[in-house]
Length: 233
Image (cartoon, rainbow, N blue to C red):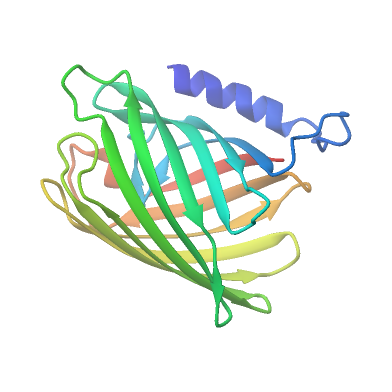
């Protein structure tokens, strides 16, 4: 499968001794950031977007000199309505107020080459409120889509997450969320795991996911352990 081959190539490449963009003599234009990664499963809102298969992804971000507005474009592996890939364009705003950090964004997503006739586009709106005090952190997230991809109509997602920095390199987090959607399953999902910074640019995340859904013929809600590796510049 193409996604599995890409995962293997990404792991080999990312597992090599990591160097910074400056070490190679290459530097990104001011305001730009790039992240690439791969994982054993693509989990979103604690459910699998690849039915338990491996995936790879890439993200390009741009932050203008104003600093509180940003733009992002991405592509990621999925298994949805015949499509192996999903692209996304996003614009966001990151104000601060009363000691809290906010991230409010709007994204439009497209399935790439799905089955003809598939509803392959969707808007998704997200609001995050977060705060860190010493090694502790917390985030509250709300997401809404008026019409998701495929047969799923509108949905809402609310998630609470807490984290703790055990060392400058090791962070543990746990989250629980609730998704309610038209024409699909309502469920509660949770995850717990840790992220370790292997280098300044390279990190490894290992996480356990589960939901309260028990549908034997649908693997996307099954519990599993997911490993992801990410390289960012």
